[in-house]
Amino acid sequence: MSQHLQKSINPSTESFLYKKALLTLDQYVEGIRSGNKVILGQAITLVESTLPAHQMLANGIIEACLPFSTAQESLRIGITGTPGVGKSTFIESLGLFLIEKKKKIAVLAIDPSSQNTRGSILGDKTRMGEITSREEVFIRPSPAGTSLGGVARKTRETIILCEAAGYDTIIVETVGVGQSEIAVHSMVDLFLLLLLPGAGDELQGIKRGIVEMADILTVNKADGDRLALAKQAQKEYKNALHLMPPKSNGWSPEVLICSGLEKEGISEIWNSIESYLELANSQNSFDEKRKKQSLYWMKETIWSALKYSFYEDPKTKELMIDLEQEVLDGKRSPFSAAEQLLKSYLNKK
Ligand code: GDP
Image 1 (tube, rainbow, N blue to C red):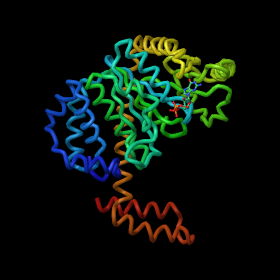
Image 2: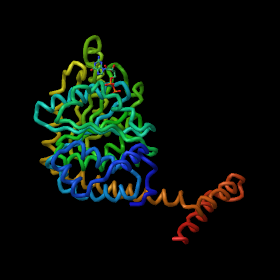
Image 3: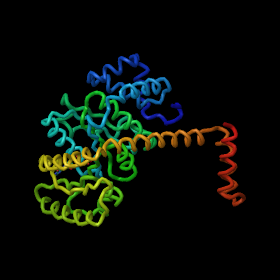
Image 4: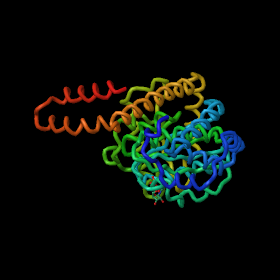
């Protein structure tokens, strides 16, 4: 994979790796397979790096881990909702619940808005205070990145490493504000949308498309004064969902209520997840979905590599300046300018 593919995901990562001697591919894979969190973390750092040598090594690790990352052994859950809806608090409660069920949980985040070395979501781990220190849990904040595609791809690769390390429940958290849901949707088996009580979806800034993507909706903060409001919102969402076409696998999305803070309603959500699992297993649809997702990521990766190669090509860049001006001056149509640019780029290849 070209080093030009992605802009730097995490510059501090690279200086860290420079200072530290790299392990061999086999050592990384063995470390991951034995559940060594430090080595898993270092391997993810390699995945996030943009240095060609790191990328080559990371690709080797991913390939070696792929056979251990199968639909039978893991469940990938996407969790989304607007900032402040209570995602971190909910993940903490769900995490504790799952630890009781002897699950091993990896929590990853996608937050393309974050330009810092660490993402803003999951950056503040205080609301996940209890699970962060648990042996059964691995938490990795969102890598900072310039493009959603870049960050999402890294997360997808990270899922493979976490599964090979024995995490059977992968939670991918994202902020419910737009494009990132689509990316998360294309890497999880099941999508959970957290909603606030007493607010219609317009108010919550949630696009209809995101509601349509959700397999389970849950109105959070159903506690104290807000319990009645939460029940009302539940009713409204149920009615709204009736108007939507059923999912292709025949699943009708459920609308539940919970309180992440009070740890209420978590087992009901888990029951719903299990019902979904049962249906999916009876149809073998997880496998099918994952196969489709793999093809999606293959095409996405090609698409972004081509785009990068085109826009970063020095000759194209130079020609682009002149042609943009001609289009702005009305001397040339946008289509003819595009054609000229593509011709010049393709002839060079
Ligand atoms: P996130 O931005 O979606 O991750 O939301 P947080 O988990 O950080 O929570 C945002 C705020 O809502 C914090 O002040 C939490 O204490 C509060 N909160 C989260 N879950 C609940 C809940 O179930 N009930 C109530 N009453 N407050 C909650």
